[in-house]
Image 1 (cartoon, rainbow, N blue to C red):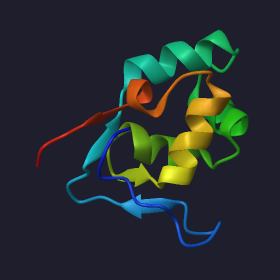
Image 2: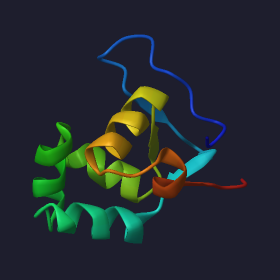
Image 3: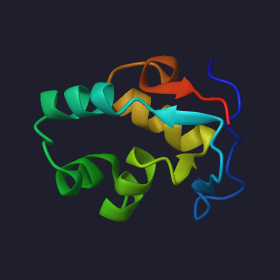
Image 4: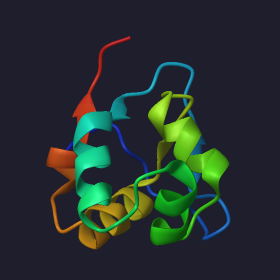
Length: 91
């Protein structure tokens, strides 16, 4: 499991502001997996994952990293693992 993700304390705090994220979304993997489910733009990806389009943008540009719960939900919805969907980054 990718280290550095923290669980959200409640459902409304699902994003963690990341000045230097410990993990980052593997954008190419994310794009391929969501496209396979028919979501080919950020609006469709957001709808698929149940988040705002802006949230998808923040994940893609490494402005935010998802909480562990959100990362696990994303991986489950995309039929993959958290390790495959995210990579560790060094500041």
